[in-house]
Length: 266
Image (cartoon, rainbow, N blue to C red; front, top):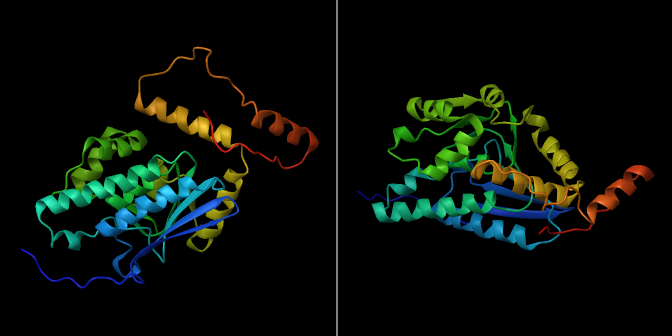
């Protein structure tokens, strides 16, 4: 059954991108709905993810929600207006956006305050690192909605916390408090809410100061370890980068910050 739902204006529901000093900051704005994303917002997120990739000055991505929440995931109320086909298409848009963030060839950091639920949790797990405040709440209570987890969705959680905890989160609809999520490794760092943005910015700047070649290589290698059988070293991949390694060594010896210039890696 379809019902009328008051639509958010562009000013009320939007996703913004700020770029400065090597940092790209994506912020989800829809605080009156706990930053839940509509299908249009998922499409917008995918487009903004591509914008981040297209700017060669971007070294690190920070992904956050406006106000006191990360995101409650997809706007479930919106699905009430949709046919099953429309709902399925909305989930495709959601997965495309999450995969875009996940596939970015630069370090990504999720800044988690308040709820990261359902697709919001998947979006957080698509980031390489996650910093949470004591108010962070993580869960994937899809069992209450009849939403199914495809293998790609499930794999993101399984890779981090294992199959048993993944099943527990769905079977019981558990919502993890920040301390529990930190203990399980779903949060890399747990900080006070008042310090969350400052800490995230500081970490982003630190990561951005590292060799892009090193960061890209470890992201690629770790992803290969997760997504395939164990890879044996065959001597074809060098241990150091021809551009960044000499600069890194020189900067260490000269006791100065390194000035890395590489933007891509083969």
